[in-house]
Image 1 (cartoon, one colour):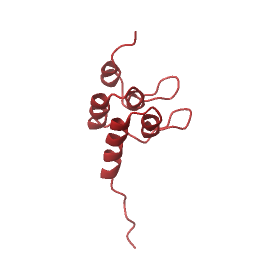
Image 2 (cartoon, helix red, strand yellow; image 1 turned 90 degrees about the vertical axis):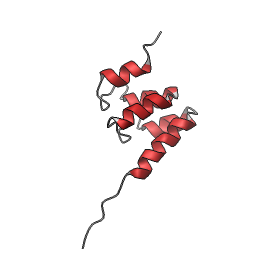
Image 3 (cartoon, one colour; image 1 turned 45 degrees about the vertical axis):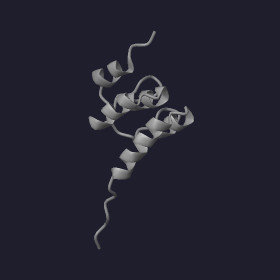
Image 4 (cartoon, one colour; image 1 turned 180 degrees about the vertical axis):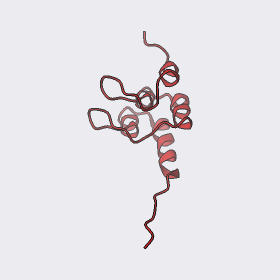
Length: 87
């Protein structure tokens, strides 16, 4: 039996990666844990890292049919601002 996913989100850095390169957010995405994904993102978790297979959390959520987590990550990505170069 696996420890609760919340354990992983609170006991390691949101940037830490496991043996396959997965972050806590990626694990939440695969498991469809919206509450855990939200907590990770609220505490500075990044949507940017890719695992050793070149997949980010949003892609893992989509591939595993975890639409609510995929939408949550999408909302976070929509709030990012892109710096505009001043000429």
